[in-house]
Image 1 (cartoon, one colour):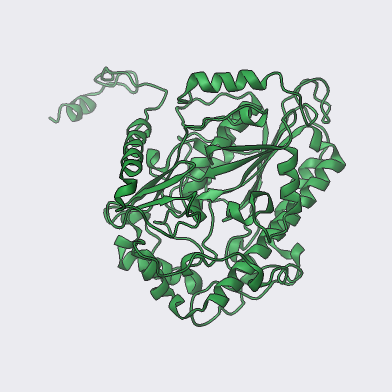
Image 2 (tube, rainbow, N blue to C red):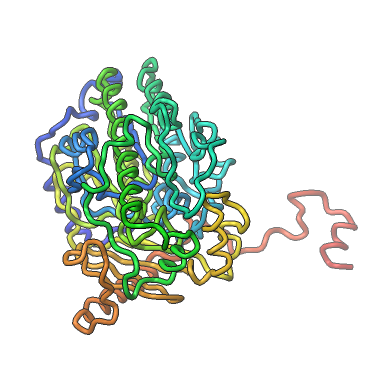
Length: 528
């Protein structure tokens, strides 16, 4: 069951899409490339890690070269305003696979993944007849959940730090800038790509497939393969959001002080951004290799491809690097979402707000599989087929954890030279990572932070969110309206019961149906 307001509008949008002319060959009519007559489309989720939407050419970046990502945007649908549910990998991915806000089941850290008794997209697809492949980093499923949810999986050895193991960590400020790596084909993401290509090349089966490519790039450390490393000159980049802005949350100054970033000049932050952009271009090259393989195997005709990411990255904005678990800046929440679907309309640019976990509902819709839990994701097929979205929709993101839940914190004394100071800061000063939530419309960002600085921005006038309007009387009406919507959203989405019900009667006593009733059982039951 999906909770979907504005029902009449959405129904009209789907009805309007039904008669539109397709821009790609249909995978659900006639013979597909796989030989399955009338078969469901194959599904690929090309999922980068820590990629900002504004780092892509098709999202308006004037510098970054992303020809392959731009190509699928021209061939399919680009969602201009997609926001993640949480600014940290694990929590964001748990929401992606369930259609739940992080507050629904407490998946708000790197240590609580989806367990066997919880729903997830991939188990639905597997139970619905798909072969489901997971290639890349985890950060979403508990280990015992893999067996019922996936056909096969592969995680490259070494994980995010693989290429940097044994390399001495830079001394001085924690900028997370590392030397370039020598070979683009030696990185973990290339191994993920090769696994995906093998599935594309496999002998035909009667079952459609779903491939989740959980890539590492452009996640820090900031380091690109040597033939990408010098693609961008720092002086040519757009301006960064400056540090030291008024009415910013306390963690801005605390991170800069703890990491030694107050000593880092603007030129070095611009170098970090240039390297980050190089990593983005490397991810684009990987996508190009996948697209070539899809065309060579005919899978471009029967496979729905979605490109997205779990969250963004500071990459020098506000004089900061990487991300922060209690942060809600748009550079961390605004992610790309591009869908090229057989039968979809080419060149769609959907301006309305959508949310990252809408991918779950969209894949289920494409696969003809029904979810058996209440969720809040919406299928994007109406927009993909040229229909209208919901102009009144808002996007919601949560972040942080509080002192009464120490189990959620990243452990102190761990994290090594890159993440040690991050772990220590949040444990020594938990107020810097306190729980908060945001609502975004096409114009505004409002962040409610009960334990710190709340925020209000007009993104149309201030896209880098540099001027906090929270106390500006001229924006009082907008602030109050957003506050009300945020409270109502929590009321509507928190504490959803499961579908299966429990009986109200007590079980038989003594437990005769379970074991023979003997005097000692009766005595124990009666506490004699």
